[in-house]
Amino acid sequence: MIDNFKKAFDLNTQSLTEQCSCGESFHHPDKLLWNYDENESDFLASTSIEVQHPIRKINLDGIEYVSDCSCWHNKANQISKFIENNAVGISKYLNTLRENNIREVNKQHMVEVLTSEYTEHDLDPHFKE
Image (cartoon, rainbow, N blue to C red; front, top):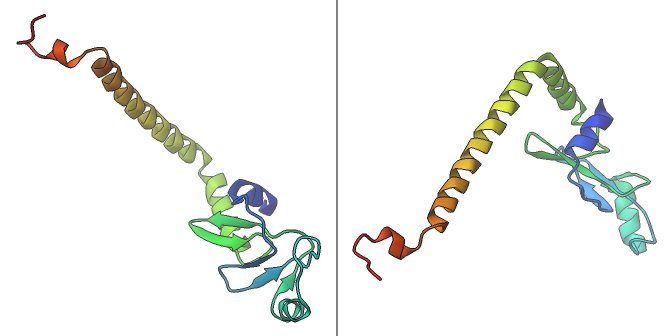
């Protein structure tokens, strides 16, 4: 389930150092991607959690989390249970939103089509060629 959330809510970014919204820091010590000096490497090793891959972030409910951090797992479990327990209602809600959006787009398109078919002269009753 956690992997599903990582895929669904991934921000599609990667970095070598990140701080999670909970305050926990993470780093990836890849010397090929970044030339850490000795002091920087020591500082990162003493203040953050080392991971062996570029660090990714996810967004849950408007909050960004480091995907390797476990602080967001309880929230993901709660959201997952809500989705699973309300799948039919959520599906109806999303379909209604979609239908409303399509209706709005179609209204806008109709106005554009109607107004683009006529020139200013066509709309002026006093115009004569």
